[in-house]
Length: 111
Picture 1 (cartoon, rainbow, N blue to C red):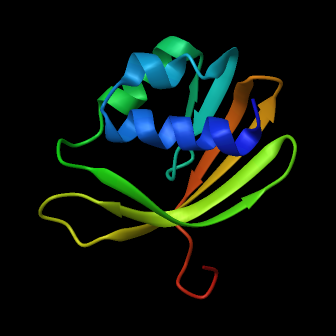
Picture 2: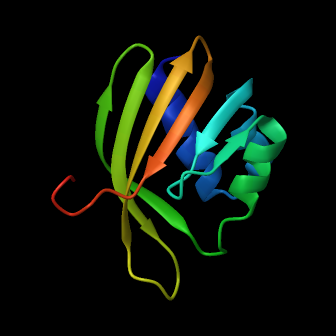
């Protein structure tokens, strides 16, 4: 599966609030590095991270860059009661699995 397909599947599963399904896209020792720099390693931790998202949160993708083993998505996360936040998702993949996802909140002049 191409990196962009894995990235799209991840966003789809996160928007569907399905942490277990999102975690299955990752290698067993895959990891998410969240915007605060915390690392969530392994499928159980990844599922918990996804499931902990605030109810009503939705990711919308506006820009995509891709390669064989990486994908970069830029978009907005919308959470009820909060202003929209620009987000960047950097996916590293190997074969049919995500090995690392780094989630950043870019500064306005970086986007």
